[in-house]
Image 1: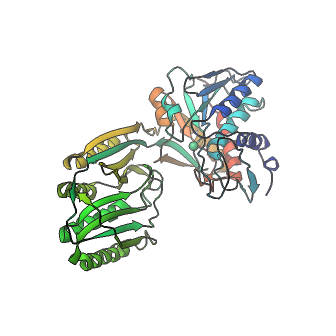
Image 2: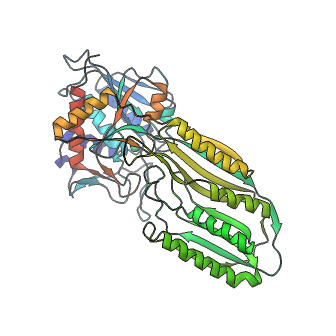
Image 3: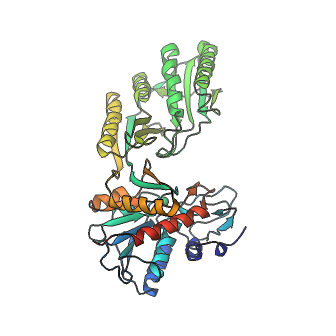
Length: 486
Ligand SMILES: [Zn+2]
């Protein structure tokens, strides 16, 4: 293990180390903003802060570059605070201690905050250094990217002047991002109506677990199975054979996570018990065979449970099983121009029986084409409307539709090729970036996003690759040098 001061570029890692000392979980960015504003004051640079907390710092062009188009460099100042269970760390108070080992910078047992601390560090070095050649610069620091993008969504027109924006928040060196998916949540709610459980019955707790799950943006195409869908498929089929009563059905967790587990409690007649158990085991075997390569750890469980007092009403049960069965999940369309890129997807994220009053089904849609996002959200709406649920759409944010004629893309591509003798990949990310929200307020911006390679962002295993950071830094400086006159 080594100190960051031993790696190049020294100034960049030095600022990264400084930023790691400052606690900055989402919605608690006060200290890092204070640091950034103090930095502007210390270096006699003009700055503005808006009501949401976003800061922009201006730096004039270096001599001879005054007529160059203004470039906005953008990062977000907050970070995700995740730690391993045994680690004692308070993200509101404690510094992160990064170290360098075998080509990577990481830390022990917590997120590192290279997402997006490395972007902040790059901005600060460029603002400070007098030898880097560039036109007029605006450095935009947004708040609260990780838990709702409220900084970017509250950005007001007129806060920024530049016409080109470089977002420093992507995580794969060698890839240039020119678009991202927008998203919307669609939530269906069924008021619960119950009926009493008959006499001479047995109750079973059944469970589907061990699926790989994953992020509904980055991994929706890698993770075909959904625990709620599998369990509902069983219940739908069992309903035809045994007419069981449903007491509860819960599964999934976060709206942007593909559900890994689901469980239900059902009631069947005493005498049906053995046949019901066999039916479950046969179903489990069939699905395990279907998914043996994709989901090797898929597990089914069935055990006796206490017989509950009531189950949901038969009509409601029928509507619920049918709606969940027809509700789409997974990739809806692939992008026609960019190979291997999901264009539109939907995640059947969770089902919860809330205090036995209401069944809540949460789904989340993404697309890089805004009209396609609306189309899939409407389709989910229609499925649950047929089932008589109440439907609500929320949390919508716009995508960033790729512009293949972008000038900043052309400049960055040719810099990359010249520096590294290789073509960069041009990609659209299926997860959200703040660019879509910024573009909504500044529709004429020409934007691109690139960054060094970061692995395990948002997890305690987060690490950033040093070699890729050197390449990212070279590329950024070369792009700034090559921005044409306006
Ligand atoms: Zn980020």
